[in-house]
Image (cartoon, rainbow, N blue to C red):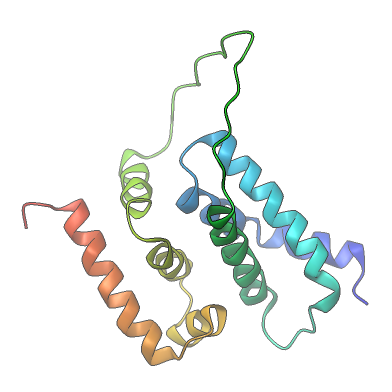
Length: 158
């Protein structure tokens, strides 16, 4: 069995994956944080079954994407009525081009978002295929189609 310290070390090392997946699958900051928490919980639950057959990051992506996609399948409308108004959000100091990219990615189908998240992480087609359970060739074809859709969203006049 893997140790808690090893799990936490891997989680800190690959935190960027959690952030990226949550940015692609959730619009609001609160939803992103909730999704990161849910992914972390699912990772911890599944960690005893991690055998090390693949890289930790590959396994993490698989769990993170399955969690993000599963969240949409069981999503129900949640209404709440706040008793006080929230503080306005702090000004966004993020690169506008990067935010535009993530906004465009969120307009794509969920399966395309997963492909692009892995692509943006510089994974090879073989690694993308391993995470998604498809061949490297199939990953390449699907990635090409997703990138074409993304380009049309970012540059509608082209």
